[in-house]
Length: 381
Image (cartoon, rainbow, N blue to C red):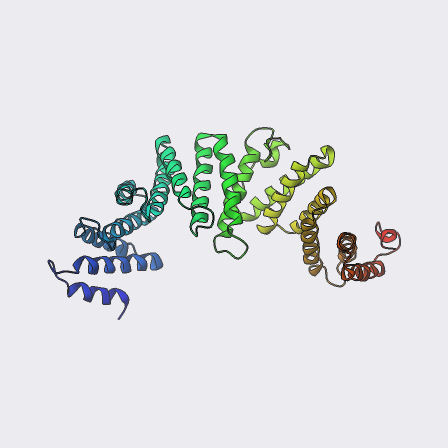
């Protein structure tokens, strides 16, 4: 017997008027909702919404188990999901009303207030996307900021609110053109990415949203605004909006190259920092050969600031590149040569003989592969 059938039997044992009927209605509704998400059966979703409403009627006031607020939450969740599926605005409007009712049950100081603020902010953002009413946008941002204040650094749900707030701000920029909202979205997106290290299940979404915000930031004016308030390149670089992750990565990488070119001309370290950020994001979005450019940028920054962290990352990236240049690959010699030089740089900083030994070994291998007359032949000797 499946879970839905079991919950139906439990409901049959709790007829109208018997204690526990509200819980039986709620549990059956929740099971149907979960099945509707897994199997995308709209009939299950419709029945779940009806049962959630019936359970809510039997929970007129909040109790110590938070039954009413839980029912409000799940009914709003189900209506929001149906809105996503069918697009009926009435469902979204009802979900917002339910979210407001849940927030009233969680006044300042309540342990679940942050959840209610976050959920209502998300629902209002959806409404703003649909109807573009500035009052909905303003309220959504206000509520999201309030939720973020209740989720300080170290709170397990802070990354979720950061991501949602950054997304809302970027949408606000798209529809209203408020530049400072986009700048805030970039800052929040960066913080969210730091809180979602490699391997985190949400990192891909956070990185993609941040990359989109960064691209918009450079697209903001005809001169293409840089991350530190300056302008970098020909607007035709960003003329076409990317439609895939690969196209977005390519766009970011091209921007990083323009910043790199400007750094070469003006020697502004902010340009170099921006080039590294964009190339790093492009690399993670799986742009082919992005690791070589990131390493080159980081190596230049190391030479400017002498920060060993940059050099360590350069060596890691060049090691990664070398794995893709096996014996016989035309780029193996140059990869060995550059990696050897980086290891030699680190030896000069830290005097670790292992680095020197490895540098010599790589340079010897590179010398054997270089032909006389190659650009790096004499350097290897």
